[in-house]
Image 1 (cartoon, rainbow, N blue to C red):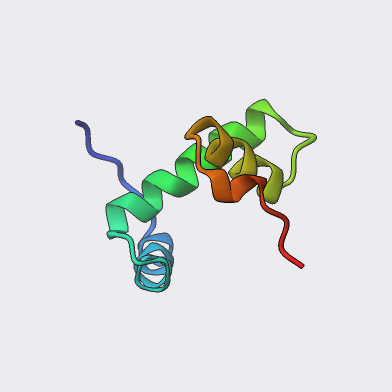
Image 2 (image 1 turned 45 degrees about the vertical axis):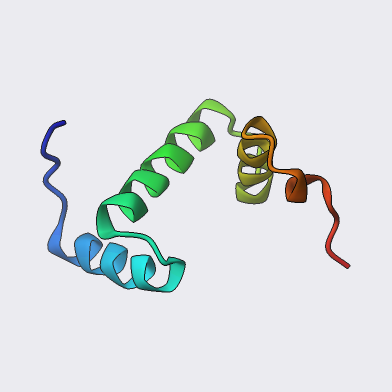
Length: 68
């Protein structure tokens, strides 16, 4: 495990987002990094497409359900 230096303002954003998303600050930053990496590798996909793809790859059945 390594150390990553981030801007204080970005750290504060991660702290606030982690509270809303019920994640640790580290888990929130890791989520953002993973989504960003996937977005760069798949520039035609939206955020929702990426999350749905990840849910399906984890075999989360709710990802197959449409919300009305």
